[in-house]
Length: 266
Image 1: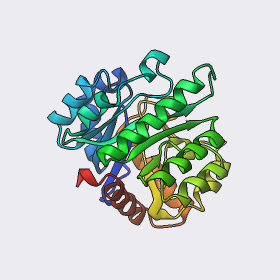
Image 2 (image 1 turned 180 degrees about the horizontal axis):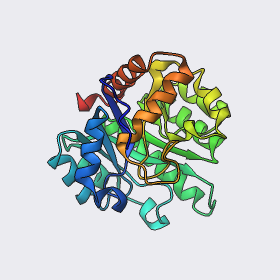
Image 3 (image 1 turned 90 degrees about the vertical axis):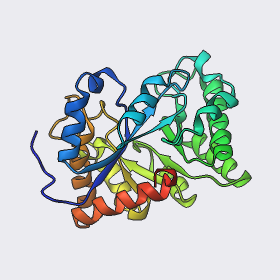
């Protein structure tokens, strides 16, 4: 792997899945390469909080790893149904800094639409009670998710990031107007993602995060291969280009943004 850090500011991978086999099978190498690219911290996501042991163990073993937990909207319907107190019970862990990922994903099927919506609202309520930010996954559900986030925010405010943002300019505006963050992933480096780059070019840098969503969505020139936190450097490089700022400044600002959103990590 080409080292592109060259003594630049630290950067943070705000969303990855270190417990997935593709990364766990070479975890020492994954962490070593991340360090060599200046990756200061990593936020690993437990997509089904009912099975959190491996994620929690990673966060306890490695200082640079924090975790979030929730139920991904693509999990089986029976897992979307949970007791709020069960999720709340792990929110006090010192390394759990967010709730999620949760959200709406109608890409594959709308069969679980009602359960996804109920689960999303339940996650938001837990995040509010635990005073933690929430991580949102949105796919083919822009109007529905904008409506829910707005309605829940009006009831009482909360902090939020739209992870791996690749939705419409409409959802971007709705989220930004609520003070939420949009997270760039490797998608912004893809040849056919000009519309997404145009959307991000209008986002205030103070509301931008970067992530790999590894092991998925490796950025160009590694597209098609397994992704990992070290490759967040390519995303930061492209992000700086899109926002027309110095790359070092971009890395430093998105790191500052991470700690502003996930203030339990400070």
